[in-house]
Image (cartoon, rainbow, N blue to C red; front, side, top):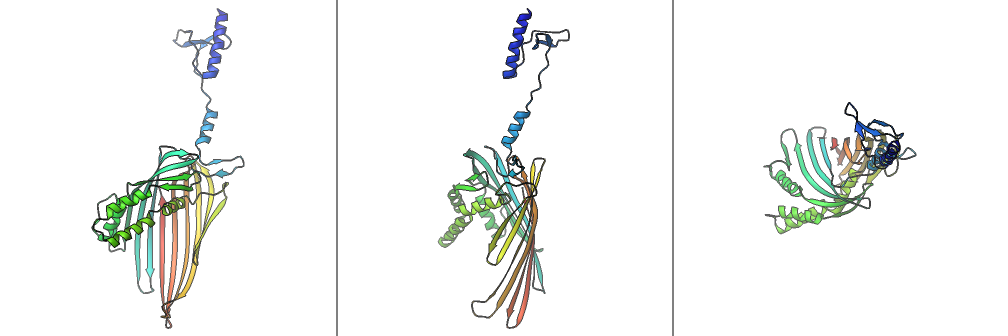
Amino acid sequence: MNRIFIMLSLVVVVASCKKQEKPTVVGTNEKGEELVVNETGDTVVYVAPVADNSEVEEQESEEVAAIKPEKDGTYKFELNLKKGQEYPFKIKTKATNSQSDGKQSQTITQESSTAVAYEVKEIKDSVFILDVTYKQFAESMTDGKEKLGFDTNAAEPTNEEAKQRWKFNKAVVGNTFQMEVSKSGKVQNITNLYKVRQNVKNAMKAGLSEDELKGLDSFLAAALSDEAMQQQFEESMAYYPKKKVKPGDTWSRNESEGNASSNVNYTFEGIKDGVATIKISGTSSGSDSKTDPNGSGMKLFQSLEGKVNGDVKIDVKSGWVKNAEMKKNETIRMTQEFQGQKMNFSSETKSTTTIN
């Protein structure tokens, strides 16, 4: 009998090692507890083993993490989106612009928001194939006396200009095109934008003249072009470092246009509670002077000064932005000089942009 129990014990041990299955129950005690045979051949009360999943959990953690440490302590930033999942991107901006000529002043407040959904349809060769769908557009502007604007989630506005903008954006909402994006956030390809442009044109063309239709075609070709969509997406990923970084490392993005230039610095602050934080700070500046080319003799001088500060919070698992906030101040000064007389103008804009 003991030999049978020993053989049975060996079978149970082997099966347990291979499949983590419950061993054969050989009876119960007076308390009703199940009895099994252990490795030494003794009959004992069965206690369910606690599986050690630490290695599996570690492997799964490494598998799903988009931003994880390398052996040298650096971090590589990349996207790790999941098939079938939708990733939201909602950007809101509120800007207050104050203009003055030294005698009179005016303040205008503008707000805008755009909501886009990116759904992962396929993942091929480390490239994410996304369905991109615009969900909502909203704009408003007020000078303290009158407020104009629209929201595609609301009714058609009565103001004619706002009505046309509402109609156009309403025609864009719900349309979908495809975008192929690499792990680094680089757009590889865009398809089906032509269908979006056609759908918008069909919704807008009623009552338009032939010249107005041509103008609409030109506007759609620019506003909903592959290049425009690529630029919008990649600018939304501008905070991604192009190389591996350690907490405290800083990288920069420099741009220039004419006599104006901007410099933005990004600093990786580290990871806490599954969220990576990147601090943003930057400046912009420029100046220009020119004389009226029509020969009036009027001279124009202008200068630009600006700064931006903020931070971006990134989900470590997906690499997608959880939330972000950027505050920007920009001042433009202009002087017109004509026949010894000077007129000074200034324009100061303070804006706050949030994402998600």
